[in-house]
Image 1 (cartoon, rainbow, N blue to C red):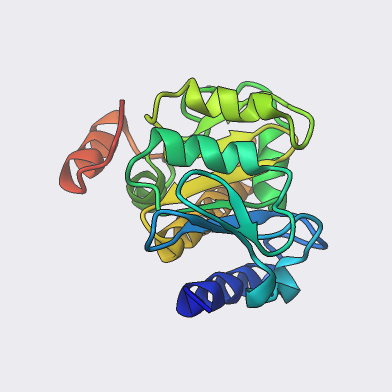
Image 2 (image 1 turned 45 degrees about the vertical axis):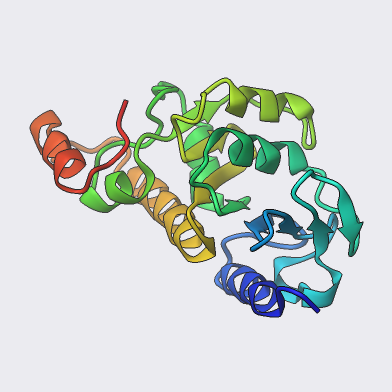
Length: 214
């Protein structure tokens, strides 16, 4: 079977996310570019804790479903990132508790969802756009991501969960973990006077690590 290593890697990362409680039940979805320009995608209704490498949905470079089970109903999200970000090699979507909880609070900057608490969220994610609530599977979510014109590698779907695109599976997974951890920090610090990074410090991080920040 082609792409055996990539299939196994996808399932390994998914199980790691599941085992650590970052998405539960049969929630979340994950995809990766294959060497021929196609996609491997987690099937609809499946759990990150028990994905079968042989059953992953396989698409060709034109988006035609070739084999495996039916893909996640959130394909519009994945397709939108691959279409608008040439560097996207993998996309991860979770229903992670802290980021969802943080999205429910009022007063967010929709263009920059996360507060500047650490250098690492800036380095791994850049700005995270907060998108409004959509019904699960609604193609309008993909349209909203396309509307960002490739400027964001990560979005937060309000009342739903985060989505992150990375150059490969490893970077996408690590980045979405950083999004969840930063949201957790923000919740822990709610209502307190804190020493967040200053605008000058954020600029230093952006410059030093060549972060997309516009």
